[in-house]
Length: 234
Image 1 (tube, rainbow, N blue to C red):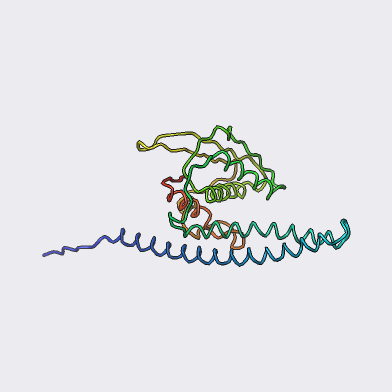
Image 2: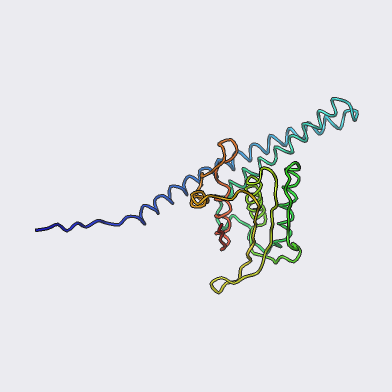
């Protein structure tokens, strides 16, 4: 006598269900972020408009004039939060929502570096870019590509609290008989442990504190690239 035990392997089904749940979470977060960004932009527009009008009608270099200018400057910095919300909102965008066209990669790289240098002037970060003018054109949504680069540069900056170097270069390459552009971003930071590397692209996974990260940065990057037919690896 004996037993025959038949067990059904449902690993693939479990994986698909988990991916479906994660997709629903991302879409919900994207919709909420888009709504918040819209409302926030409207409020900032009103604040900036009134502050600008006040500043224009005050004598320069007086205390009231300086305070009006501070309001304008604060509203401008708050606009960066709106941009971050919009980058999250675009996770839920479909391919038809994107403006995929020929984009000069070098120009987007330079724009991303300029934004980082303006936003974090006190950070001791040196950028080494290999001839951005010679970088090729690629098919992408230029706004989302800029968001992706800023997300990656932010991660690199966070990994170098005491300063360091971020090196960026790009080459044309062939993968599976298809022409690609390989954009490499390397930093001299602390790196990732094997466990962090395993979960790096999972939505809502983060090694940062709750107040400083939502765990969606690399999810934004991966989802955007995959919609354009590209991919990312660490």
